[in-house]
Image 1: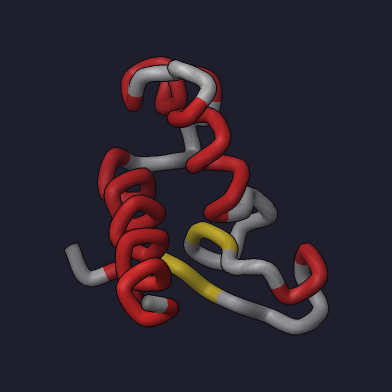
Image 2: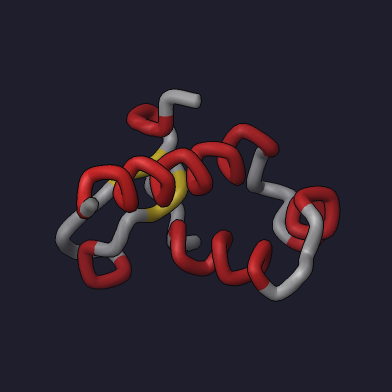
Length: 70
């Protein structure tokens, strides 16, 4: 999954945190929902403007960030 096209960082939006496609939902929030036990399907139901690829991009972004920090 190439997250570059789906994860955006804008200085004036959400304090410069990585967001999904320029929207106000952050990568952290999506990861937090997954970590709390929500399924992809539940997240997509609660946030109909998100796409499955957005969630996968968040996971890919987090995995890449972890790889870089090691």
